[in-house]
Image (tube, rainbow, N blue to C red; front, top):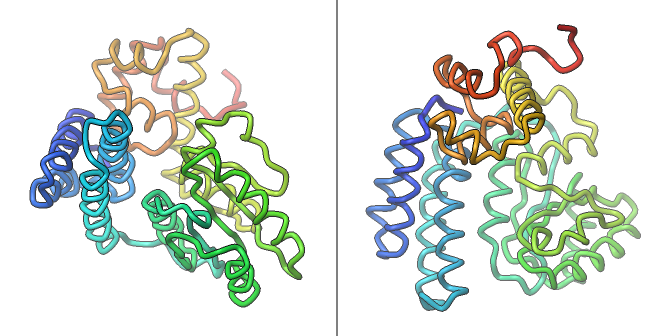
Length: 298
């Protein structure tokens, strides 16, 4: 986490997207370096620079503005930048737990799964990253041999959800079935599939890690700083919703970026006293109220 301001991330995101569209690995690296040198955590750069850039390119491809070759090239540029960031990432102490991460059979869009795998690496898991997953029979054979504690899937398309159900059915017959967590764009385009028997559905990589920890009996996940940031974010989110404000409206009234507000509310963004004072003014909260754990008396 870092105290990098929203303007720095907003600029980096714009430059990174431009670099992808210009097919420039050099400029993409420059955009990443700018926020990395400011102290931003590699996973924060994933969320706030690489993901928005890739999503924008994907939208342009879907709209016919760029070719599939250009979309594939942008993906390769992002993979290269993720490799650089992974090299400087400092994982937490080993948990003694193993997970297998991949996309479903037939889905060649594995960039999201690679990102999720890196979140688990950072959290101290032993991670087996499969990339584009093998056919179902081969996957089951592998799982019976590897015996992971958790099985994590990034679901790109709504049509892949049926394949996920087949995986759940087959793994349930294993002697020691892994806990299954899934998430990704496929669930965002199919809200009705947000509950699937036999799998926990995560809305973000961070939540996927939290769910895997809970399902696999790993406790004590949050550091003291993480707990404080989660408290601040929860109080800000609760007050914003009480006032019936959108994240965009709160961002505008506080002279901040909407993505920054989202990161703060999610407990993922370190914040300065100055930012807290801005948010407190917009929400009518004191610093004490923002720092007060839920359930404490007034």
